[in-house]
Image 1 (cartoon, rainbow, N blue to C red):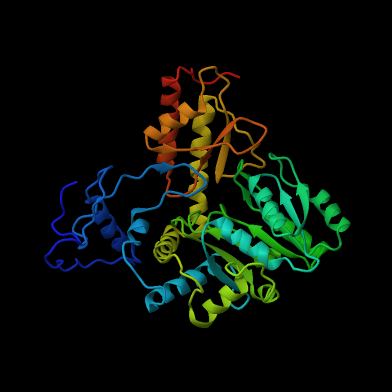
Image 2 (cartoon, one colour):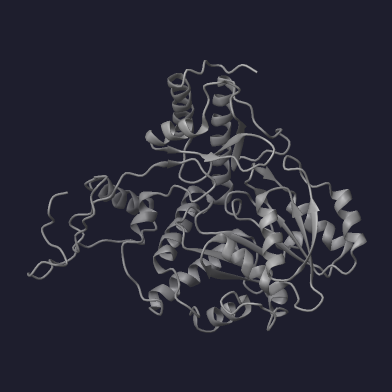
Length: 432
């Protein structure tokens, strides 16, 4: 790329920075910021950045048709282009805005629930809940499992030495609530239950609200944890009304931030019961929340840039019309994908009764010329990224409908898939 007019290594002093607002809260402000992004110079191989923001070289983004990390808007990316100290009052206020905003999305009050940001990926937050909310003495955890992420919860518990009762279902089926009730009654000494809302191994949506109501009726003293990693912010969910005591999600999912931290929404009453119970120093949710409540400080270094981006993403979620409006866009994305690939002859793994609009799993074409690696690489060369399958009993690939994607993006993917099949010598529509 061309040499910038000034760099951190230049002998002359840096020019004064241009006035720039990274915290735009109006659509007009965001359009102004977006216009700055559009005028930037793009180069795949460039690595230069001007300290005066007079030149930023940004590689072009790919379209991510995945369950996460997801594509983000230019303004979310731009929000990271500044440094704040973790004890800076502005950053403390940013964290405060994030914590209260997430509770609003969950339809709960700050008096009854709290938000606990956790440094690291979503799995870090999952492990933090398991290590804290299951009692050290006589703790017994039932895990509802119909995919890789339910299995991961069970694995984490086993590594921690926690007794696990697996409630296993087929990968393509929702849990049978009558059988679950039988299992709950067969284990009166259960202390905890965990379930995954959207099991993105294949895209199934589990009835976590109905499970919470069942627990309230059958075993009201059991603490209930929901992994809502790929659904929170994209699917309306009322946690207090459905007996959900702990819920986990991540910054880089339906709220459309960037990776770097995850978060736990916890019932204050039940979080207080975990004091001194954590099996980990870093993952102690009670102590993490205590520090944030008392002085707004993290115990250990937070993901400052990721949290600045997340604040911007939350504001953009509100500008879009909240969870309900985002839900409608994601549904429309899925409908465009479903209609397009169905016309090409692709078959979904799941039936409509259990399939979600978060991610859709498709069977491999039954044609001798189909090779997933080649299929993936040809789409990737067009800057379109899909995911391989994660189920154990079928050859599949997955396509996400969430993130910074529009119905036009979904149609472009359908058209690209048709073109790639043509290049691979696979006639369309596909034959059984």
